[in-house]
Image (cartoon, rainbow, N blue to C red; front, side):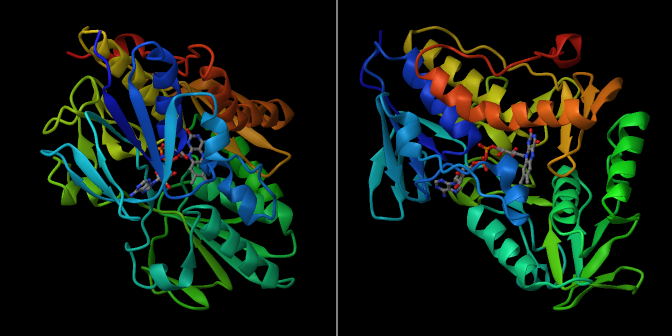
Length: 389
Ligand SMILES: Cc1cc2nc3c(=O)[nH]c(=O)nc-3n(C[C@H](O)[C@H](O)[C@H](O)COP(=O)(O)OP(=O)(O)OC[C@H]3O[C@@H](n4cnc5c(N)ncnc54)[C@H](O)[C@@H]3O)c2cc1C
């Protein structure tokens, strides 16, 4: 059995936390050392950032507390360079870390470079501070003021509903190129629209934002939508670190991985969560916690296998749900096939609220339990749909 391998986990978001803690438990008798690097001392519950925008206070989960009792060393800092050939990386406080194995879990953020003005005039949910800044802006608004939410994906829908529920005095418009909930089954989608309607959200579907101005959003048609506060939720960007370090990435900057989630150019780098370009038999995964946690589990298990001299196994995963909160008092959960195509069954109302809360609270519970036992985050391996050809 190999001893003294140093595993550095970059990023303590959902996937980095889970990978580090699960790996610590799985290798506790092997002498493997684990270092976890993250800019903030607080664990960010990204799934709940729209709640901050609406004025809720989230639990303050400290990373050091979450990993207490394990052999994980937490380093507060931001990785600024990786030398994949030399197996080392630099942290912004000047620390240099050598690694034998790197777990790259830097996540993703909303891309405000897609249209002019979004980076200057729009708010985002890119982290706790950004969400708090948006909330501060909302607090300045008075009855009748307008809020635009650009992007009708899950984040946009959840944010629009949350704001409209918390501030029924504001006029909230959700602007989207696609129909919000378009990936859901017919009945779940209809419920989502009824709920947005009940909350007073104006849905402007089939519209593309061309520009964000200080007091309005300009559409491609030239139409102006008044906007005292604009929230940008469309598009995804990832850290440039991998590209800049010479690790093979795709055209979006996501690291290209093999079947076991290792970088194709540097197999000592395992990639998990939103930062990985993962292709299964039916297509590409897109960044969700639902798929990210299983990638973290797989990688922790892969590294534990390699430490024991065993072979890595291919990653398999199937989607099973699309949980969407619609404020604090309503939600809709669409159930899916492994390739994320919708099933007919769905949950709505109170039952869906309870289900969604269970989804949002389960990662932190899982981190705590994983210190003592192997807890699985994988609900579905996808059956035939995700088997590789
Ligand atoms: C409002 C909102 C609601 C969502 N709801 C859902 C949902 O209901 N279901 C679902 O499945 N998904 C949901 N998602 C998506 C989900 O949050 C992401 O897919 C998930 O967080 C990805 O996990 P991750 O570990 O890859 O990245 P993250 O959780 O983003 O973690 C990345 C970590 O890396 C750190 N980091 C970044 N750069 C560096 C660096 N240079 N050095 C060191 N550390 C660094 C970051 O600070 C962060 O802590 C939602 C997202 C948002 C914004």
